[in-house]
Image (cartoon, rainbow over all chains, first blue to last red):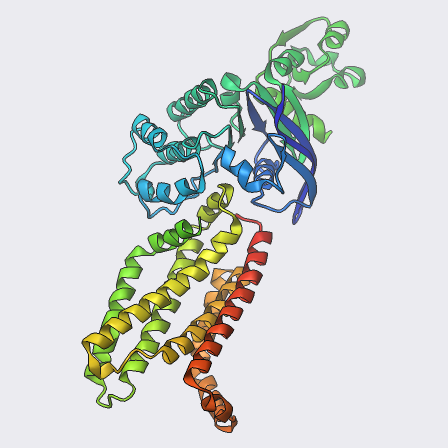
Length: 286
Length: 215
């Protein structure tokens, strides 16, 4: 598969926070989740790759084109949804659209109308009267009405109720089915990714922890539950993280066969993405 | 693309644009009514209308941009180049000035007491507007809206003390070479200097905004 986005050795410093040698790539045809806790560097990474903040060093390529020298051409081919709208809130939906639309060479008014209809949005309505969920849908309508090949979203599901989150996931699936080349979205609500993501990239404290296909990742990691007396210096090393109570322990591991050899009497479960994320963060702190 | 960004500036302050147009229209008749000496009514009302309109509308645009600061981040995530976002502010200011000229010209036709519409006066005012835009916009890109607002407040408060000093200095200055110039050369000079000021200022503002980390 070809990469539609390739980030190499990206560095960016902000006071006491920095992105350190962030490298990853997005294969074509995938919905990629960018996960990490709040403050891990998700938004900074997205803003830096979109040239909204200046990088200290690094190389960014979209569709095989260098971002620095083809910025306008690349931005014409991607749709962007930023967290919390980013609109002139006193304008109506139609007025805000009239500002955004001329920026794109392939803006399709019919697509925009169809999205508004699908989301039950009135073009004459003022943006500041929309709920958070409706604003997100409006942002999606703007981002998807110019035949975008790649959709980049920053925390689109944050603060939304389960129904709207579920609708959003359907919209993303439809977008991919109708010819979208990729979706890249950051989130800390990992349950959304369980449903639709093909690929996961995790960032923590400005460092990429892993980039892996979701199914491989879920096959690779296991949650192990057992008696706490089996935990010793040797067995503890097999876990990314463990939690212990008087009744037993629970740990995330990617060395399940070794764990089963050394601790025979354990319960093994498939983890969720959240288990893997939390395990990796706690493991990284050891 | 530039025209759409200028249109955006008009859209976000549309209520104030109508208000300022009304102010521009009513200042000359109001001054005719209030001032008995008709000699300077025309030029004074034009100067006042132009200064009020350009300064206040640009302030309103900056206020709205500051209120919805994240909206410009979204615009920068679209194919709009940052350079054009900056240039649109200059064009916006100049269009407002152009509108003031048109309104005043129309009023001189309606009210002959205002005197004619002199190209020299509009050229000198163009230089004043260019100097204002040329200083105000880069300072705002460098220091941000709040600090610039504070600085302009200080300047306005200090102006009763500064202006007499400037007038004293002007008393000592030799303006004869300028007065001796033909009006057309004076106008052309004012326009040329204004254009140079705007070009240098826009270059500085673009450079600063392109380096800025957006929120």
